[in-house]
Image 1 (cartoon, rainbow, N blue to C red):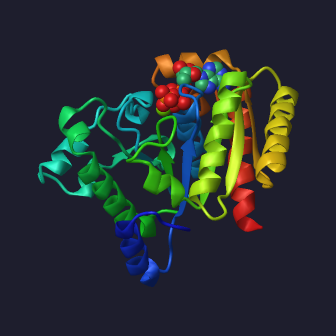
Image 2 (cartoon, rainbow, N blue to C red):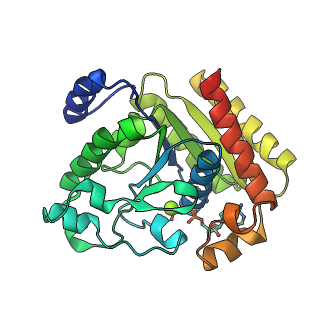
Length: 269
Ligand SMILES: Nc1ncnc2c1ncn2[C@@H]1O[C@H](COP(=O)(O)OP(=O)(O)OP(=O)(O)O)[C@@H](O)[C@H]1O
Ligand SMILES: [Mg+2]
């Protein structure tokens, strides 16, 4: 964790200095909604796990969480049980494909919505307890920065921003990048261009965003990669089986494997 806006979190991180091994914290976010964050994160986690990494996904999108739905698992326990002090955090964890672990949120639960601060504390506590057991903890957030995901996002070792080639998504992604530079000292931001027609289009869009960021913010972005439009993605969502499992050689799966390689390569550098 790099820099905190929250005293609570500062206390947590100070305490954690004794821990030898600590998971890398990676958040995925976007300006505009529906650009593919949850699907990319889930498949990315599986791709990393296939390469021998221990990966946990924390679904921190309290409004429209759906990682559990994407793999067709209906958790026995939810954050609501945690709030009611009926269970401990380990009971919440579910096992996903290829050994990934998932801490699901509870979509649309009124009690969770009304106790967002407590939920946020519980998720941070979960992170603190679990980070010694994983190489990577990937956080799925909703679009935009909300009160309950901001601590995770601004404390991440790496932030993945997802945009599509559409001008609305690009504008919102830029607004998000600007906000992150305002909130953090030196954010490590990598951009994923999803739903591109071709790899080439993705690279051009990235270059365009990077030029704007260099010009107006005097900063540079990293390019995580392009994920082209792939009709297999929608099929995989309908069948509640991640595309990387269902269609491992499809264009989107190949691109997501490349994203994973790019991210893992950075760690080795
Ligand atoms: N590369 C792709 N090719 C085709 N369809 C895609 C691709 N990526 C995502 N999709 C489709 O886009 C839809 C939205 O994806 P997803 O739910 O992952 O977005 P999100 O950014 O997490 O949304 P939200 O902001 O609501 O959390 C899904 O139905 C998925 O099938
Ligand atoms: Mg989502």
